[in-house]
Image (cartoon, rainbow, N blue to C red; front, side, top):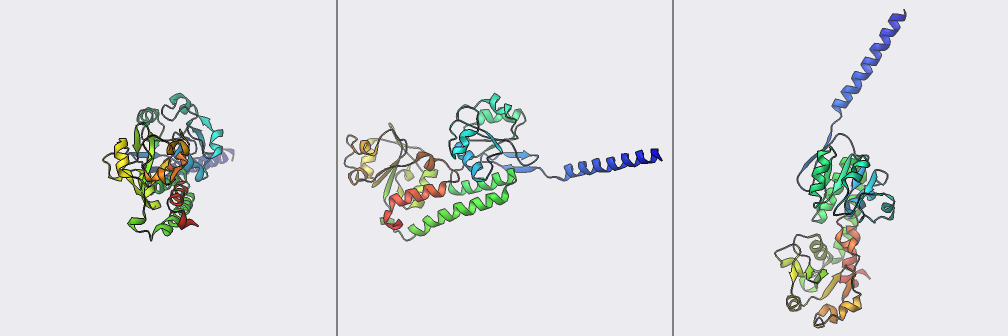
Length: 299
């Protein structure tokens, strides 16, 4: 009788274990294609994530993944809760050792992290590179992160929220004629004079906010200009975010007085992190630019 009981127990355990094995076989891995067209495979939804780029960190928190985010780079300062996370070094040169010590099952990187990413992949850590160059790219990345973290429903809700913010701006500016759209100079840097060119996130924001980007006709993404070139274009509005000068100091720049934006008091210091980070706050960024370009439409 005792032998029968033991055999029964063995059979039950065997069936249970074989069932687990079947479940493991049947459970599909998660396969996505990142912004470098790399296929990345995860065996299960990521639960320990290290984020190397501020925009990626913002997206994780917007998806409600604060607990799953175990490490960030030093530039990750939003939302404020990001400051409580372990730091893995600078944005440009994160520490491989520190990242590995956090035992991540996923690292979110930017396009400049090629070498770091390759080293982490060699160590068996999945790396997804997110580098959206358009508003649609941001929305697509929300979908991607929803898939790899098991937060597809949260990603859909975040996309709905962002889309509503974008549509609110579209509704305000939809009747503008081309003549009503001011020429905009967005200053990325002052010496040398650098602006945002075509196929950039800033170019799309300016256009969709109701302006015409001065750099849109350039042949590079981040063109430099001579002062003579800038003066000849006569921009009507100027945005800058590097905060090395006050608005009054910008307006007093030597030889800039003939530029309509300075002459008419349409120089605006904006939150560079809000404008440059292609993350979940893009709706806020678009509205900010639009309210400065067309305050009459927002009264």
